[in-house]
Length: 267
Image (cartoon, rainbow, N blue to C red; front, side, top):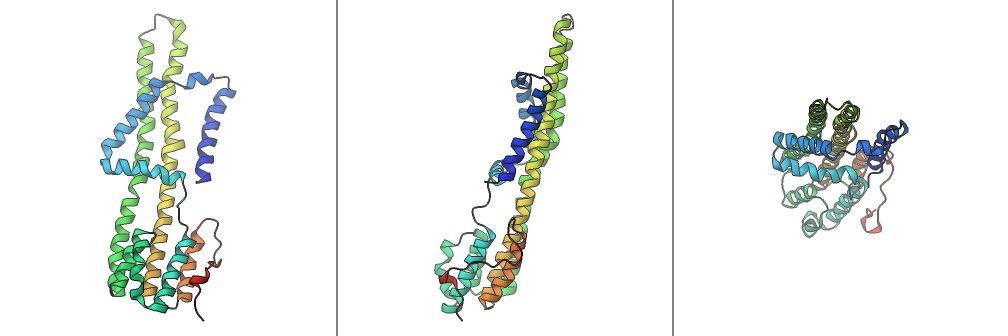
């Protein structure tokens, strides 16, 4: 689980709600179902209108990327690639054919499959770079959906406030209800601005950051497979791939990748 995401959401919610309560505002004043329906429904509707259904569903899955860390770290990917490099050096490149069904990543599986088929290294790079470009474009769609939602949400909140004020104006004959009515009307604005700045836009930024990390990982996979295809010593491949680990949070540049005995490079 991504601790920073959980802490950020809780801290943001506590700051807004806690500050309001400290000011003496009853918590019930912030819970307005009508305002929530207007803001959430209007934002989702406007965002859905702006994108394809596929992009909207993809953004829904993107929430899981924001909350949870990747199952496989870059260090584990390096160990996997070095294991393939060692096997190819001992038994030949064709021996990797039996490993392809168990490869952890689709991109890495495709690259290894092309390598085992004897594809020229230049052609393999060109082919995988096309897939990489497509992945880059598709991966940014989730962030764009949340960015759009973050743009629509405050405006929908203002619409909700105006609707509430219209209702207040209809009851001008009863001055005792004006204060509470206006307060309730502005809850929609609070919802719209809060959702945009505490959820939608931060989610978009987090998705962009994680997508950049995924792009670096894919490039690392491609370099590793090309090294295997070109018959480069696994130790050299490992040293090259370790350069990518400096980008990984919590991983120091140059920190060695632990190898299992079965992946050890023969002297």
